[in-house]
Image 1: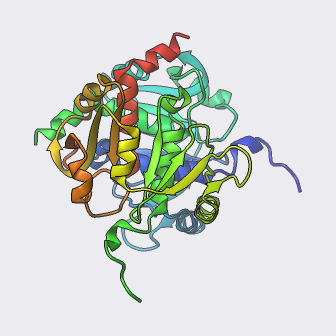
Image 2 (image 1 turned 30 degrees about the vertical axis):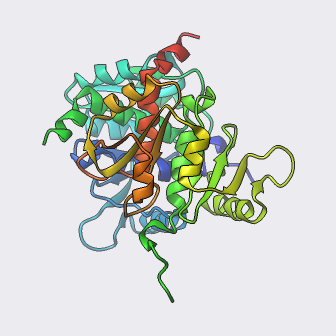
Length: 183
Length: 183
């Protein structure tokens, strides 16, 4: 048995599963105001269509991921909901071309999430990067691409907690909860 | 094969799994300011100790639940992290004796979550009830016990989304994010 390099960043598809379920079920996504990408350690990028309904069952989610990495897309026919391509994080960011990029990391500067998302919401096309690995940090290359690295709590929060709170604060910053209630 | 009564409220331990992971990982829980109970349709109440670290893996979570319902507690020896007892929702609420109870339901009155949690935070010991069933509503008995039934979005949000947002808004209402950053 060999240990792969950066072993601490591997092998936790459950983190991606929980985080994506939270992302896809958010009002921000229902409004189609969100683009979601999953970048893997071996430089694959999964593009997730907003209308994707992921299996709630973990074993079925794993089956779906296996199909995705085998065929490059899923479902195999018809409009793709998930697609995977070889792509580095810099390449992805160049394609997205965001107005501002914030990464969340325990190595970042302590900042209230409310302020972070409020500032981001002022831009045309903001992006956030949230680590999905159980331990370890963003690579130096990844950090160079971001405008600011922030830390929103003294303790390390789980990926899905940061993801869902960031989305909710962004919704608040653009007054989405009130707008939706007034329709 | 028979269909059990209220079939639509059964058989989704994945909902409880996701919701509990979000609850237990929250700063509010890390501060020990949260009590968590799971009431099941056959009137069992699971008491969840705040220091509980649930398995992230769904199959292991199911194994833990099976042990819990077999032995009434888990782990089998030492201080219990999870305990289960026969108890109705009215009995549980009488024990907790909350200052104010709000239930989230798509049959409720449209209210911004921010307002709901801000009002709750003014009380000594507020409680929220969040449905963990895939479809269906709270029973009439359950509804009678609450001070207000609210609906926070035009569309039905997933249980874990409502749970994590309610906790975060409560944290905001008591200025917990800023307090923690200033330590």
